[in-house]
Length: 175
Length: 340
Image (cartoon, rainbow over all chains, first blue to last red):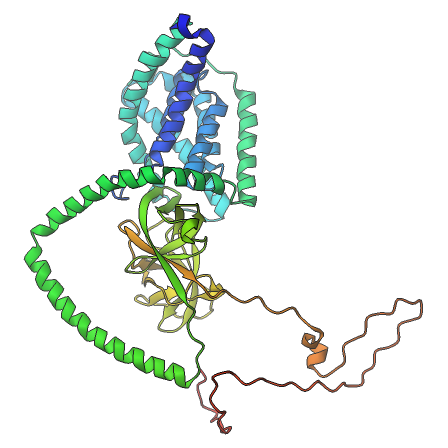
């Protein structure tokens, strides 16, 4: 592959995969068709690649990429601009600070680590929305969103592990 | 599943400075969005316009599955449903006759009283092609846009009542801010009692009520309808009924935006007229029969004291109304007449 495209193209593609994953996740999560008929909140899929790659390969998910994924989420969901962008930056800061502790978690611990990051992200978004509208939004949809996100993180983690192992890993090892 | 299975690229990233820079940019973006809420609107309209065919195509199987499930559920209760519908139909026929009689009587009264007719309300029927239920946002996307003369601010109703307002219109699609959304605030009136209020969404299923009149007595079961204040929404659109949730009064909505497939977008033709530009005759001194002050002279001479001599007001001629009946002889109004 290196002979056909050269190391810089491969590096670029490998670097784009996590960011592209985040953008695609934002598009899928905001695809306005609810399979649950609107009963369950839509999962925050865009946060999962941000958390995962910020944890395992921060060189492939820099802070500006996390911010842009959040802005894409803002753009597609129809909410006020910048709320999720800032919340994803807060999530990035949390993971960057607690990387050693979060990276050592396995099994249920890994899910709890994601839940902690989700708490930081959701809490930041909640605070920003409350300041933005000068009104406290209800907490129940946020808690329901937490539960749905944690449920969806299990298959998403499996998928992102597979992408990291089979796509990004081999591409990066060619360089 | 273990996060620790991956070797970390860096033990601790050196992202502190970029983190601070991006954090500042994020805050600036929020402030910019606060100052100009329509910052993303063009991009959103563009995205929804381009995605409209895909959304429509994807919704077809989802709708079909939903219809199949609801049909399979109903088939077991077909007989009971049929009996219930016949009884309800008979009951509604009685109400229809009553409503027609009252409607005729109302029209006669309006004719007698020369009532200003209700504004014309055109409507467009649109199909829901998408719904978004986020923690801080409740929206619906319709398959009608500017090409169908949809404009922001127009009311959206289903067969039961109002579900929201258009807040963004693309060429082929439009976004509806639902009554339950955190951004939604509409003027409503509670009946009986003619209590004016503002109904505000808080992302829960039942919006709250901000009563503008002091001393208004609320109770559960009051009917809530749009008041038409501001001439943005038609008056009288059914919205819901009030109930007490233990801490405050909320509104149980008649319409269920989560289940509405076909909705109507109401275009209120009559907009609020701009008040005429004030003239010298509108000044309080003129209304009091005094001459308005002359503008100060540009010369260096001291300003003379204004004359206090009352000026005779100009005679006012009131043109007759086009379809007005002859004015009856003035009758003495008893002091206990209730003018409401």
